Image (cartoon, rainbow, N blue to C red; front, side, top):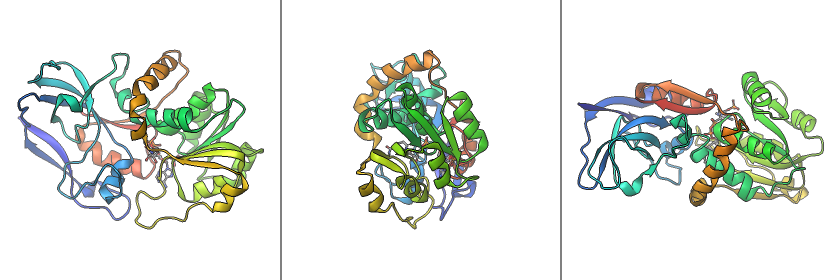
Length: 330
Ligand SMILES: NC(=O)c1ccc[n+]([C@@H]2O[C@H](COP(=O)([O-])OP(=O)(O)OC[C@H]3O[C@@H](n4cnc5c(N)ncnc54)[C@H](OP(=O)(O)O)[C@@H]3O)[C@@H](O)[C@H]2O)c1
């Protein structure tokens, strides 16, 4: 048996494409003493991987010839550990490959309440925890707040908006297509949306948030952040979470003018989800009942087969995904 793997072939200058990756057949990995052999069921594709390719991500770098890294939901197929048995479902950093070997301390069991299992990589996984941390630990939200979130239809943005909706806030989402905006309003229940590709962003924010933005959750940076910052209400809070506007370029766009922050007496905080991994159980226990009560909606953008991972990643980094990008591996 061999192991399908996806390697980085070369570093993209701008948007990644399938040419920057290589699918190979490698030898099957072998579980050593105390280790487990895992079969990948689902692979998560996330924007931070572009930062790893650029060498700018805090989790480390990926170089040409390296196996692409990534979080997976996997099934244990062989175990040399007392802690796991074949058939157990785990989450770990299995990477872009069909089989991987892990040490028990590097894996966690998938919460048995999650169905489909892919949720463990999306709204019930790292992206969901990111939203949870931003809303419940950094935002200092009040039910009277007007909340604006960018990249609103993704796993992070949609959860930020829905947590805020559940707290009684007025929630406005920014997204890049009419389909995404319709889903946000008609399915997820956002009060308003802005398609920043078809309308003037500043005018649309003024329309949707006439008294200003009390909380802005930013997934994009660049011009979008700057534009939103000029419409902050007095005492606004801003959480800086993502940099979609600059992951594909080495030229950093200008940031917001400090005057916009001073004028609103705003508080700006940076969010790194790693600081909140100890809140994972609390986040799941609070969020799974919301999903069960139909108070949380989600979308996944699922491709079948590891061979599709490069194309799916290229689409994600062009903003063409609609929902959490997942590869169903087997
Ligand atoms: N700080 C942390 O610890 C942490 C943890 C997890 C994720 N994040 C960040 O959270 C953000 C959202 O992640 P996600 O997994 O939920 O992804 P996602 O929202 O499903 O996908 C990214 C979305 O960004 C939007 N976008 C806006 N400007 C873009 C641009 N210039 N180029 C490409 N796309 C653009 C696109 O949607 P539109 O059509 O709406 O433009 C795209 O679908 C990312 O920035 C990610 O890096 C941060």
